[in-house]
Image (cartoon, rainbow, N blue to C red; front, side):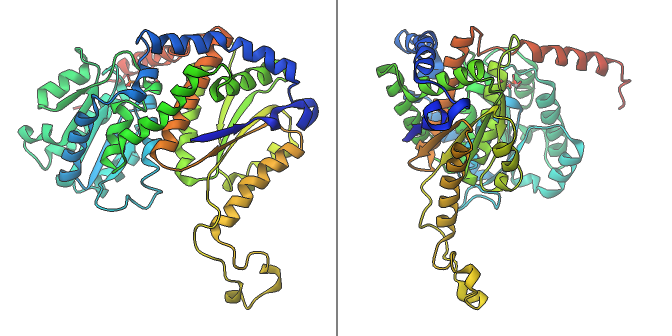
Length: 433
Ligand code: PA5
């Protein structure tokens, strides 16, 4: 589904900021525990993250519920935050580049923040009688998601009877008692199970990401099939792309003091994947004083805003440029429209896709020539299988890096402190009714 090239991370190619082959080999050997954890989890069926790609049992449930919302709604609002939202957002970007979905699929709006201004505008923009909601929270206790859900119920009560509220909702949460599951029960909402053994930021290939994807008309089986190709690589070779990527990331951080991991796709449809990646990388690996800063960039846009720093600033970043097959696509540029201006001759007769393609190739070449560590991932297709493969690659790479750093990629202990403090502050506000 994709090819990874790490020549641009090696000293032989980029000089002092790169890795010597023996150094990379040593770090590849250190990838063994993380790789073994993934393989063991597959072998003894204990790690749902690596089993999900082959799972088909839940597909009818996902498709049935997607059909239900597709039939009823013009807009589906997804409520939830962090890992309960970003995977769905990344997948949905395949179907909607910002102008609404194609065909007869409903528009999906992901409300992950709790900005009252945005919610006011959301309600003004909706025909609530043709709007459905999906509230997603693994724990069922996240204050933001509960607030969003209660506020949406209140808005619906302005146009519908209490008995009809449940029809507008699907709730995805762990099958246990929680504030969200109690709310779902009270209003007769359909509850679909969030696997207790799949953490939020690892849930994109579960119902959490696949229900929004299916509502948007994407094929959940193809998403998982793409991910399955990565699992096949993981199970068969010690030098699979995820292990090599993990070794490069770790070696550059530890040996070359690289502090940032910049993901730079050139396809708009992979732009939100960058946000998803940032959460996965930061929340999984930023522990015990370790971790590198994940950064989302989109070519060619960030060539015109960040590239100066990237090329001429400190050599403390690893660039992962994601190239896609875009040459010869899109409309042709006709310089005749500008009176055959000589200075536009270089564009004439080339398509917009040709221009994007040369940019996505020229930028990593420039980075490499400037001595900046640069990995290139070339994706065969920007579709369900392609994004499924990319997601699984980065899941595996993250877990393998965690194994090298000796940290748990699945917890987020530091985040809990802020939540406790927020509750304390809230308790000091007098309730208004
Ligand atoms: O990845 C994670 O674990 C977090 O980002 C959670 O997804 C986020 O905090 C939301 O949690 P929940 O799904 O329990 O509402």
